[in-house]
Image (cartoon, rainbow, N blue to C red; front, side, top):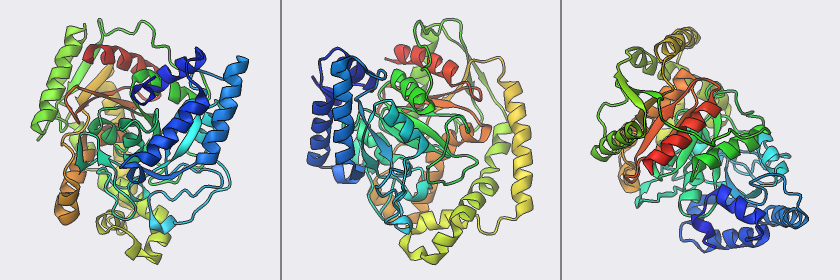
Length: 441
């Protein structure tokens, strides 16, 4: 069986039919990681002993007919900001080198209880504060479509572990686009959950007011299954999902500006296929989005800097300068400016809800640019800043508006289409995404 090309759900069904051994699958996955030329750039560290023990237990359950769910025995990866008991969790930063938690993050504990196998911890941007996936301090995974390019971040290793066939799925975090950007650039499905939907307990923070957890997968079904595992509940019912009669809105404000040629082509083609599958598509401008985007500065950086000021200023030389500069950008923001920004954002969220109430989802290109060459952004800090801002521009709309959002591949390499739903409306969004996935394929 070609396990490297299968989705997590397909592997789970094969385990259930007795066609594949969880232990053999995990052993093969670990061997593939260790043999792969990019393995050390994707995985910060493997949890070999844990993975084999979890796989052995899953195999015993499979033989006894006591599997705990569809994904029991399926091996996945975890971004290096999810605590793993007794294993270093450093969030891609030399500031946290050697940090070893005593217990698992809550979402990891739930996944383990459901029988999933933890392969190891994947590389990421320093403290998750960049959308490019470039980390010269630890490692920078390559994009699956261009090995000289960045892979997107901050969940860079989470995406590439799946895209290169070195995990059945990856779990990442998304504060301004850190699940969806690498998912889009590596032709994957990426789900950003609503803030507060999944518990952050045991997760190294960046900006807790915006931090969310989400899966990076091959299919929408996998995303639904993993959300349910991390929430310890039943997955969304995707059966019979259809686009017929759905109402979709293409957001014209900000999100369509200055798109790379392939991004525009991929998005427009995807929208046409959704229409052909029965969706009604309307295009609208919402000036409130422009106002909201201007709030990112006084909202993100002050909280991020306040969270990490002591560690940063104790050893700033350990950080990649452009990321250090992003954190320090919040150092001098006044409290009144931050509070005023939150008041404004709450008003704009209400206006967004009213303006989009008649639609099943809002559509935008997932990421406006294509992944730049690693060497180019390493050599030019101004280019790093410009490309990073563009990589997170469209995804950040979902974070600012407090929405769940799902990116799907368009069929053109490193381009995605994003569907944004309503707060806590993940089940509805996933059903819509399953229908869209069929139309796009």
